[in-house]
Length: 470
Image 1 (cartoon, rainbow, N blue to C red):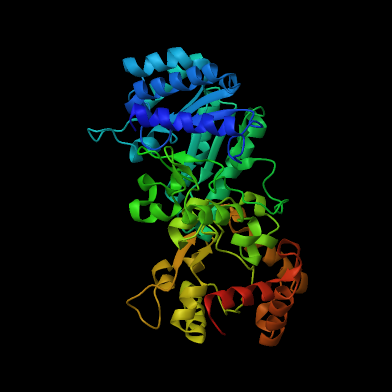
Image 2 (image 1 turned 45 degrees about the vertical axis):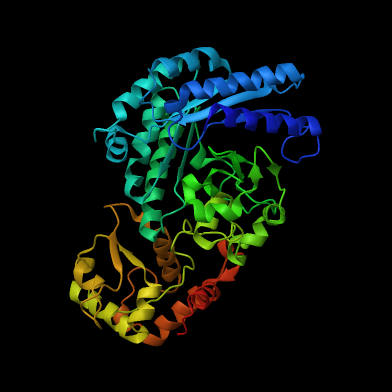
């Protein structure tokens, strides 16, 4: 962005305040955050300083009272932290700034994904920047994890807490398709985090364990601000509902329909732009969600990105639900086996695949998580289709030793089975009909987590979504 374009953006925003007819900035606006996002901001530290200079000078000249209530915000990789331009910016505006140095976690994790221009891990420079920022009170932390890095959640949060961070913002990315095994790994790490916070750091708040998580959504509104509440101006001065719709994020072709105008001609000046705004304003939880998401009893723990919705579906008004854990229905299949040999378990799974067919089996059993019993040791045979031995039929995962809570649903159902067949029952004397009756009883049992629907109903709804009849 040029300085001239930056000044035009400032002029446009302050004009909105004076005209007092916009729902973005008007004379009811109490404060403004100038967020410099998209790329590495300290590459343009001098430009940021001059744009901010112009903002505050114009607020004073026009007698607009937003100046004292303006905050400057950005995240940086820290590689240019000690450059003269960056240090000058910090020295001038640190009292009005909130700066986050991107620390992706422990050094091993950070250096795996963040390399400098020479291909060397950038943790050490980022860490030095973070330490220097402490003198300004910048103890911000923001980390995003994916399945491959879930094992680093606990040590990463502990590292930042030990550095004095009292608020640690972390989440898991929206883009991956999460499996039940991923959910187990996430649960394992969050349990370690919770134990640490309770025992050693009770004054530290971690967003992924926020107190609001684990309840139904209280309001029918869009959770994400990316439908116009976080207006973003691209380097050429064009405006988008947020940075996730801009060319830097989705490319020029996808970005074009979501452009809301520009800093020179104004916003919503064409029919297409007005229709786009009308569509964005109408988005609520209900309009973009399936009934399953709307009725979910733990929906407050499930976030979404409207821009990513657009990238995947071509509309921000349809939710991408990849973060929903794979084990949706708690539907049970109980198969009696004569012994605890590994080959016997493989034969039982083979029989189930033949009964369902290879395609249906793969669609239903995305993964299977076992404990460490020797009867489950034949992982390769369990994964390989018995119908077409050249393709896998599922993915097999194993819990950690003495970690039955990693298969919590399974352990809960084992308890339900024991109500009808107490521990010590000789199953060689239990008929197939009795086993089928127990399975039916469990699957037709109303579940509070499903709004008192049964697992059988939830399973059928899932099959309907997949277009599967069994």
